[in-house]
Amino acid sequence: MSKVNRDEILSILAKYDKNDITIATLGSHTSLHILKGAKKEGFKTAVVCEKGREVPYQRFKVADEYIIVDKFRDIVNEDVQEQLRAMNSIVIPHGSFVAYAGLDRIENDFNVPMFGNRDILRWEAERDLERQMMMESDIRMPLKFDNSEDIDRTVMVKFPGARGGKGYFVASSKEEFDTKIANMLEREWIEEDDVPKAHIEEYVSGTNFCIHYFYSVLNDEVELLGMDSRFESNIDGLVRIPAKDQLDIGLDPSYVITGNHPVVMRESLLPQVFDIGDKLVESAKKLVKPGMNGPFCLQTMCTDNLEIVTFEMSARTDGGTNTFMNGSAYSYLLFEEEMSMGQRIAREIKNAISEDKVDDLIT
Ligand code: ADP
Image 1 (tube, protein in one colour):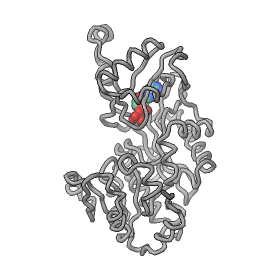
Image 2 (image 1 turned 120 degrees about the horizontal axis):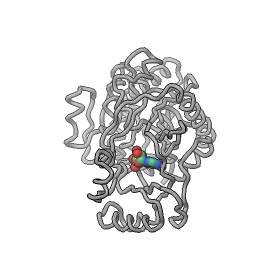
Image 3 (image 1 turned 120 degrees about the vertical axis):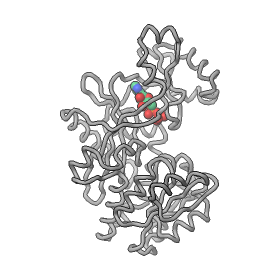
Image 4 (image 1 turned 45 degrees about the vertical axis):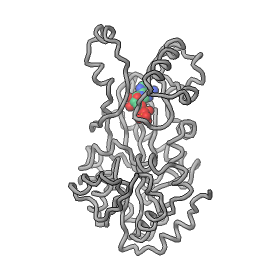
């Protein structure tokens, strides 16, 4: 396997007719506003769609072209890549694209120009790299425990990969940790292989804010475009049961994300929000060139000390951007129009075309 060569990607891009660019993505995750936003900026759009999953794109009329595949992961097949290049496609990555195509194939086999930094996707997917980047940025993260023997406070236990919080649990001692691991194995929510990979971190008690930023390479500016908070099953239902009944029924909490809602933060917290966004962009430039180009997200908890603690980052458009397909309070402040993350991406590409700087946005 050889790495996708940036020079090759740029030579593919050089052959594209810049007046006839197609914005393409995989039909899942955040593709509705990616495609809609591209259309609003005047681009043609294409969706790579798993057979049987076309309905939303047809009903919302966001796609000009459909490339129907048997399985999502076929987006990296050579014939699909050829079709994408023939349409002068720039592909916008998102969470499902990364999950289905797979990092190895994106890095080694996917020879289609992509918006943003393809190398940074591994940094959000692997917890150690993610932590390294955030530590380097001096962003406050939950304390990490290397060993379950060391648990001396309430911790949250997680497993590798974004799995929507399934199998995650809280514990306050080594004994509780062991009991709950056994319970998760019994439920088949985790497998034996997962156990040594358990990631144990300080449980941060607070309120959840997922902060959606866009770093414009053209303007060298970090923009705050929106914020959401998550609906999580069953924890959100569980907290509606009085504490004494919770004990009686013995339900275990889980953190499976089922939806998102838009939120705004206390205005006095916004300096922290810009500070951590700016810092991450600076360290990303040093650690993984060309840096955090385009959308990224910090998933945080805000404590009652009004400290923002970041437990996760995404280095591409995050699912919570779906809460502002028609703009957010923050994107209104910046643009005075209904700016979604998808449209912001398309706007950047459009501006780059007119300034002859598309190469700067593509890997
Ligand atoms: P995934 O990436 O698999 O979706 P997350 O890391 O986002 O999982 O965690 C799922 C949920 O668990 C979060 O939305 C949040 O509510 C909760 N959570 C995660 N880490 C912590 C933590 N350190 N303290 C408190 N709650 C947390």
